[in-house]
Amino acid sequence: MKSVIENDQYNIGHICSRQQVERGLGGETAFRWISAKHERAEYSFADLDRESSKFANVLKGLGFAPGEILFTFLPKTPEQFFVFLGTLKLQVICGTLFSNFGDDALLDRLGDARAKGVVTRKSLLKKLLRVRDRLPALRYVIVIDIDEHQSADILSYAKLMGQASSDFVALLTPPDTPSVLHYTSGSTGKPKGVLHAHRAVLHLTQTSREVFNLLDSDLFWCTADQGWVTGTSYGIIGPWSLGVTQLHYGGAYDARVWFDLIQNEGVTVWYSAPTALRMLMREPAELFRGYDLKALRHIFSVGEPLNPEVITWGRSVLRHDIYDTWFQTETGGIMIANRPGLAIRPGSMGTPVAGAEPAILADDGTPLGPDQQGSLCLKRGWPAMFSTFLNNPSAYASKFRGDWYATGDTAIRDADGYYWFKGRSDDVINTSGHLISPFEVESALLEVEEVAESGVIGAPDELLYEKIVAFVCLHKQFTWSRELEVKIRVHVGNRASSLATPQEIIVVSSIPKNKSGKIMRRVLKARYLGQDAGDLSTMEE
Amino acid sequence: MDVKEQLNLIFREVFDDDAIAITPQMTANDVEGWDSLSHITLIVAIEIKFKIEFNRKELRGFKNVGDLLNAISAKIKT
Image (cartoon, rainbow over all chains, first blue to last red; front, side, top):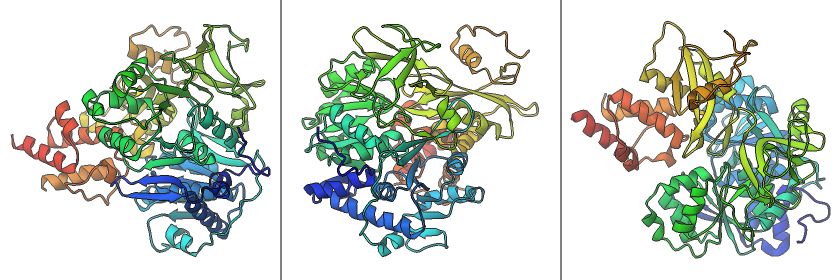
């Protein structure tokens, strides 16, 4: 396969736009935009190049320099893509934030990154302004849906873009230049900024070809939000680095709307998530039989393990295989996958992609043989590997054992080389494919006046893979009520994010802790699941 | 305060937005943050505030705010 790197230029913004124009694809559609209200627009690669270049000039005019950080805090909109690529063209680092993040989540991420700018829209501005005074490094807020600048630092995107030149040539960008920033949750402490480099484009191009089998004629639809690594790696970079047209839809999940889009727009390769697929499974099968899915070549899934039932459903109802893929924010791109041409073993993660070298290691680092469960590790050196945790090199170093990156997942490899996910080696909760830190939810719970102590676990859930279960201990003067339940749910949703809202809240008289005061989440989990809690010798009396 | 005004207050609280002005045609696509998880919070808040309960079939039938308003009005009359 011909490399996408020409003249040593690794710049992702350049490769996804200008390079496609130079290949003669300027008039071809880069993405078909369908808004939540079903308004349609087509943007060519020439449009993508022009708008992203203008935005690069906007940032340059505001004094942004390579290595500084700008975030998008947007739902899916065309501006998301122009801003992302334009930011990268200038070698400014682009972070992306979910639009459902609450005040605390914003503050943690923007504060840690010392972000210089945020691009958002009017309806989200209020959240940002509430934490603004605690973000001293934040210089500019650019709002995509106001016509005039509101002040010297709350600026109109339209006005800035209207005055910007489209004449911009991306700086020659070496492979290790920082590019994209996503925050990820751990079981302790604040979320960590996973920093990637422009070299990731090599891996994203290769996996888009190898796994998705993308062809020049494809229409690719990745349903992931750009706040998620999938949304940037494969909802932007992978397909566009190959000049492949994408569909982007700005509305929410709706089975009929989604299948109308697949059929009527002619989606050929579809990348979604197990929770969405399980929601579709709950719809009557007749709904899908009315659709002509002849154009659809392949369906892929990512985010959580794909249950065998979903694969069976896909075969019987959609008449398609569904290929599960595995990667993490830190890996930047797909590392292990099922894919066309490889026999699916339902429930398996698949086999390593080219360039990925996984191993199952014991706690002491010894390689384990077939069918032995251990830590899933990856040999360092693949191009999309994260460069560091921003401002936290010691946490980055702690993820490696020599040349091996420890993913935090436990797995086995069978005798034929297929990998099988077994669980997490930490307390991080995977709900609908999003990693949630129990610490973040516990912290938000403690901000509720009535809550004295809290402990949060993930518990198995048929739809979400894991649901968030919160144990709370109330101050003596308060009693539990449904009103308090709503208060807690609203508070966590608005401070952290709707994804972090507990699905179940259980009132207890105390939270189990060890002698140094650490919450013993494994004890809570065992109690919830009715299992033996194991060794309790370190538990506080 | 009529049902619509009370429901508007619940929307503002759940979605943390004092600017929300609900209309019968409004859907999840029109409200920032109205996703499947915040929807559960919204429904629980409605049930408590209006002292009503929705069954699964009713919940699946809500396509917009107008459907919600109609269901609430029908339940508080009975």
